Length: 200
Image (cartoon, rainbow, N blue to C red; front, side, top):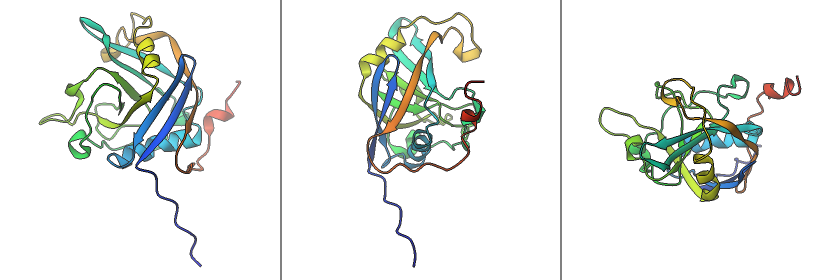
């Protein structure tokens, strides 16, 4: 007898990030960006975002109240799952509007992991356009934009590499716990290597 099929994800899955700056609730858009949503939810369901941080505040020149904050696993390879191919806005129909959550990546479009940005104000330059694949929006902030805005104006250090120069938070904000509020958790079952080094 075949086992029952896994229940389908709701079209929108809410995820709460409990941070040291306050709670943020995200609406993860499984309907329009299913691949990116599944990737993010795997990190949530595995507990891979617990104990990570918001580490970057990128403010627009002349408009420091606008920009984005970036968080996730940073460069911690122990928490990383498989690289994520880009799911562009030209495919999903989603846009980099204020409150959007967007997957960070390197120059290679297939290099997403679990680093993400929360936008304060629109950034249409991050959408896909001829000659530029852009970035992948996969949901938006439901509540906690006040927390996001507070993080955006926190002090940053003058150092940093290339695009991140002057944007690294002096005191990163810890993501204490990330939990889904809808649907059924689907942990990957892969080793939680970072826990093996906890306390060392």
